Length: 164
Image (cartoon, rainbow, N blue to C red; front, top):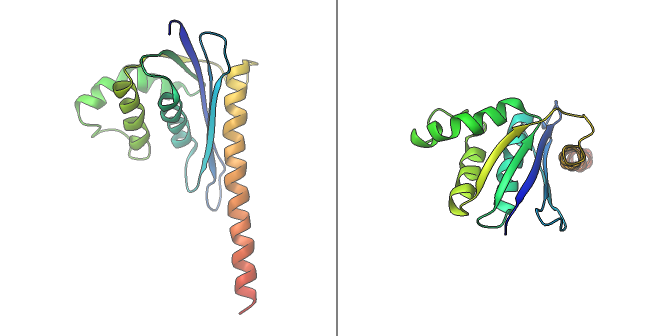
């Protein structure tokens, strides 16, 4: 397949008890076909962790041999992947922030195993870019789902405790 996939990624996390978070990606196919999308949720997390997870999940979803440009509104993520990944890999990921290291390893593994050719590009957040807005909406959806699940568990626990 020729052409470039445009992969928009984003992450979100809510402050507070349980720190619910979400990640999302929207990948536009080079042939104009249906986009690939994914999102998910996590607990006890940080927005930066969800940002890196979105990249790992998106790269894992791409077809083998694909050429892709990953676009994110997280400038440090783009700089880290474009400038630090080779050094991190050479050092066995020893100096990567431990809160993101597993996601960085997963992204690297997807690029290596699938022989992906990946470029990195920063874009301004909430600037009307449809791909970025969609990735943001998917990440927010994951965070809402995580928050809803936490609230349901708390209600169940409160109900169980009050019966005793």
